[in-house]
Length: 343
Image (cartoon, rainbow, N blue to C red; front, side, top):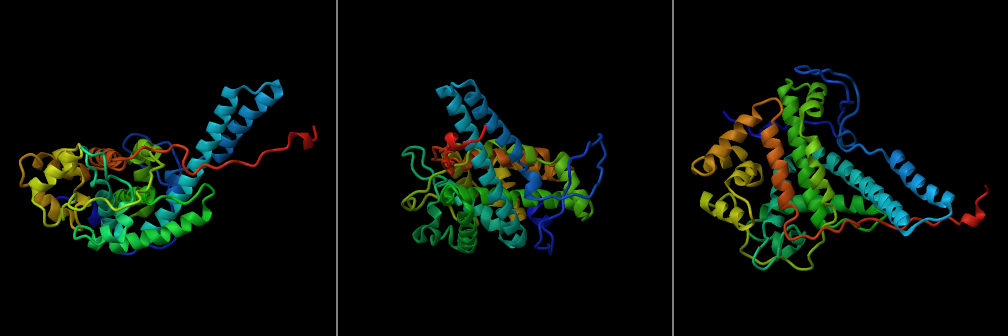
């Protein structure tokens, strides 16, 4: 029987952050185990000290020369903003990692929530898309979204936690919904690796660190700064996936610039039962070859084809209808009064 990554979730998981693998040299064909911490800090480790050193050096050199050029100041400011965004994103991923780990049964709904928020995009009118509009009561209560209300309520709680620590303003629902899907996917990828190691969490962490897809999220994470819509998106743009025909699904994906390949790889987003969805998709001659390809990929050690294509597809969906604000969540730093410095 083909493997569904949603079927790999453990029956019970400790609510404490998972132990994980430090980076070790991995020889071809081997997995070397060691005791270290894993989790979001491992997945998104940031060297804040080095970033601050670079920022300080950029400003310090300009001061020492006595002529800080406009370009130099702009470059230093850019470094500071990048560091601020990276630090905030790391905090968000840490909170989401814990939330997903403690609410594994919410994973299918978090995935569908991200899909349904994004796939309202209409190319002709340039409206809809990944804009957080699904948060409105009139939209979340629609037939295609009714089962997703608990997942949205969970994200409301997460948003409160994040906003309390944010120095650059509240996180948008548009960002939060897509980042929650990322965390949900990472959890399923990690659980698949643990299962392939016979349920050994330490070895599974090492396997995912050495051969997993974690390095493929760069473009997705750069697209951080989505804006929220002020109004619900128009009705009738999202199928009720569990009741839709394969042709209806194909038509919807084509309408937003995707095709049978992306439909197949997104099977876990189309309802709570991935295996049932894939059984339906496999009846269509256009989609069937891709369903089989990804089922075979999930049976391999690394799941490379499946994971990389899924990350790529989610990345495209997550920016539909968006102009990313790359200065979002940045904030002015306190100016230093140079006259009071003792040299």
